[in-house]
Length: 156
Image (cartoon, rainbow, N blue to C red; front, side):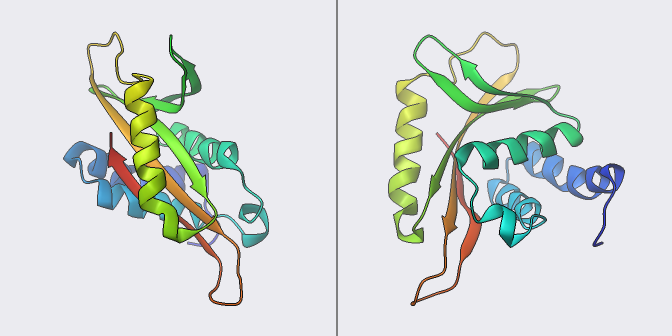
């Protein structure tokens, strides 16, 4: 499928994203998030900042039927993206890095931020799941080609 309508995107990605979330299969979720990212042209993604990646996933999750909101304010800070279904509330902290060799370091930093800012401490009758999401947005250099991918999704 090269040219997709909103309904086609929802049908194609919706089943897989929802199945991954329901099963708590975050490796599969990472794969689907990378497929979504790959729908964008190199020219647009090369200059993306953290907020642009966040907004890409916000809009995609909205198309898939999730209630989404960004920059959710808490007493200690604000999380990047929240989305919810009937049973769960997902809270995401994104970190975008320019070098693939610092994924683990940034992953730990995102998890620490989630814990320190207590993003998961919410009044909700739903199960709350907090995600640290690391995106590599590395430009081509003499040693290797460009990398644009969700490198890690882990629960904090």
